[in-house]
Length: 286
Length: 281
Image (cartoon, rainbow over all chains, first blue to last red; front, side, top):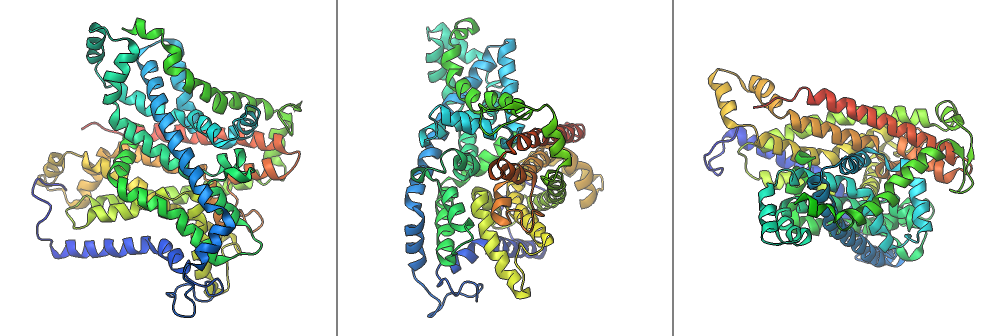
């Protein structure tokens, strides 16, 4: 399968056919995205008539759909809150679950293993199981704000992250930390100066997996802050705009779907290597 | 060392544990309790014992049917996603041009959330179905096919990445040894490669199972259960009952508990079955 020879050598006929096959497959793969992109530039009445043609003179609508969509949906504000909640949650999750995982891995008692198993257990539970009480409790505690969402994500998403960090910390030799203790470091100093830098690869994995989840999550933010006109996130805006069956402005809907996808494509373009490696690493360690 | 660390319990674990208590542990026990009551808020719960469970399983909430539909969609998707993902990974770990670009494209749908994905596919499938004067919500079979297509499009790239990681860990010496012994491509694949990537198969089956069983966003966006709840999956069924029908929250909560038990049992059985087939190099 793999060989030590350099990858760039002449391909055989069979390999060229395979490459061509894969190229066609990737083209088919991006058809849904091309479809909404093309239609987002058509007048709203032409989308259902000629959905698969490129926009031409008569059907080309320029940026009209984008302008209407932005006015209708409050998309710009939603983008801001989505960014705030995602960045905030990922930062808090990476920082705090790493510390938690470190403690429960290094201090072995019955209650640290209980905590570990409770976290593992929370990974498998469907959200619907805790949905009603979580939303009500969040409301009572005044967590029905974008700031509160960060706390909820730490609690509900912490399981996977603790699990991944703990798996990695088990493989870190104790000697390094012991040396730091000998030199007079307190546990906090030795954690932040010695242990935390070692956790970087897992931190990337945890950050990627949580960013993908929090950014795209719909149900939790919709139930907790979705009723508040001020705090909608992107998935909520899309659901409200596209999911309403009344006056469907198809053009505006296509435009907003495109706008919802653009930040992800940009994120992917810049962080591709880390994202793909993070996903692979997350699966192997989990 | 452990001794001096021990005193720092609250510093290291406090914030995470408080959030975990608020978001999961307390709601979990409350949810168990509420499933045995009739309630509309947290404070007006009235004990009804196992009545909710009985209604969930025998009443007309559509829960059992939704579970069946979920099981069928999941079973088909788990099979197609994993066969497709493994085939892609197998091709993309060979010396071909452009493999990195291909991998990136196949993986991309995973970054797009279920709501956006669902509506994107809804619009496109409806545009195609228009040729036959149909829409995705006219016939449950169309809705089901649409869901399965969408799931495959979304998850195949993710599983492909995991299979690629697995395939790259197969020692090339093993493959070479098999080929020197005269094994053909298929024999090598079946007797060497597949047993060696069993850990990846375990995790991919688990992830597709968990993902498809708990699927909500895609279902809501693509069909929202139409026509007549025939394409409603279990997660959507529970949310609808909880928030759209007044006075049935207790039943919805009982359904969530049953759903949780089913998901856990299947996941544990699957993990056990595939873990047993894992081998060491």
